[in-house]
Image 1 (tube, rainbow, N blue to C red):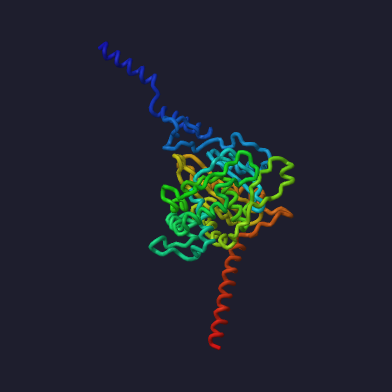
Image 2 (image 1 turned 90 degrees about the horizontal axis):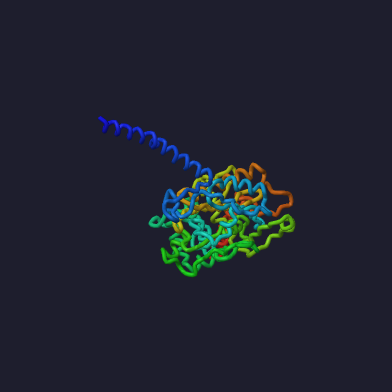
Length: 399
């Protein structure tokens, strides 16, 4: 009897001392929620591994920590920071017609040694292929390959299409154009701490030029490099040195500086439909706005870290380029980067920041719809000229 009494008292003590399983679950949930709202930093159970996956970089962080606000446009800064929210990443907003950087959230990350560009490299590869006339933007691949045209391949980021395109071009031509577009060199002018990224001097050992052309294998792209390239696409082919004025005086005396003129007017016409379709109904549809947005997403993993890229520009008025880079786990992807950029454009539009200021430099082409119409008009004139020449030749032969 005494033994039974002792066992009963022991059981009662355990019930009173130990929390119930429901209490444990509630506490764990509360701790997780607190960590999420505090930036998502949780303690790993293994050194160098982030809880929730085999990732070495957290998905959530205070990305504005350590930034200098000197020279930043305060409205654009506030909008970009709010849109990025708790995610571990960087946002760059630049003016396409001048190369002026208006805001950088997470300057340390933007100026870093760069990260694999994932599918954003397809913009450079497509421009190279169109310049070299390796492909016709309207013609579809043979059925045994992809059976799709460039527009669909860009909009849905088809890796097989661009792997084939890389093989057609070859590493030397892919490399030549990529370097012309700014890879492997600093995008900015006298921006302290900026890195030049990296472009390989030979084909990647993993998958060769096919992996490079579809995933950006062995390339290190900085957010500034993607911003500079998207500025060039948005303005019709001028690659500006990105400038980041840091004082009222530098802003007042700002003058654009051209790095080089790129002869890519026709290739831009070739990729615009794909970049716009990506936002309308492709991989970047979470960025869709009332006014058309053109852009390219990228998602891949590098060194146990998930990367999500998106580079875009708006269609009319004051054309601004927005580049988003996310790092972390599964939630760091191109879809989420596109959603963040979409929120930025929406709020910029609400704040009337996309309206051209009086006397502002005109962006060429001034409107995406007009650019596409201009491309079709040029093609029509070429076709008309060819028909006229054919008729003249036929008459001469008959005479």
